[in-house]
Image (cartoon, rainbow, N blue to C red):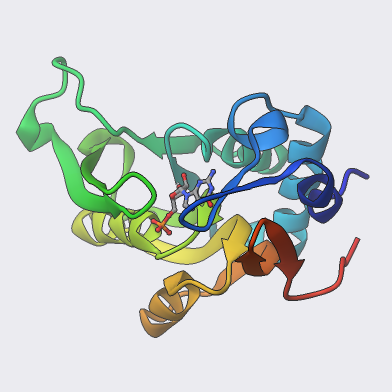
Length: 195
Ligand code: 5GP
């Protein structure tokens, strides 16, 4: 089975501002075998029984979210970062998300038709840094009256505030790979490999 921590060690690049670039297997080119392993790891942690939908944000959350949704046989729904002209304002739930990596605010939106009070969702994303992206999705779930079963993250930057923020909001956060520091280009991990 492919291993996320090994891939990060071998191919991850550290950029200024504590940004980890993993374009060769997750954020640009995508390694399907690795994504499959990631989905199986999420499936082993979370209890599928009451989850109706996997929810993420375009674009980089889509691959792991879709692989898990396919494994469980449920729909995957992604929040859009720009609103198509075919979607009227009163037909969408939306929430502002501030990106520290890009230093910009984006309005994410989900069509009201696809998220309701009947849903219990699992949120999946590629990275957890300050927690803003996930909190935007949690805000949208709240507007829809949907329950949040938990949050699954591929790469958590544990030295940033995201996990604490999400746990303070009462969320069950599971991250496959937890990074302790990105000091001077060197990547160190919080836990040893569990594969
Ligand atoms: P947060 O909202 O938790 O601050 O940041 C999460 C989002 O920002 C993720 O969806 C991801 O797209 C992006 N992000 C945050 N930190 C990094 C990083 O170090 N590398 C990459 N590639 N994306 C990141």
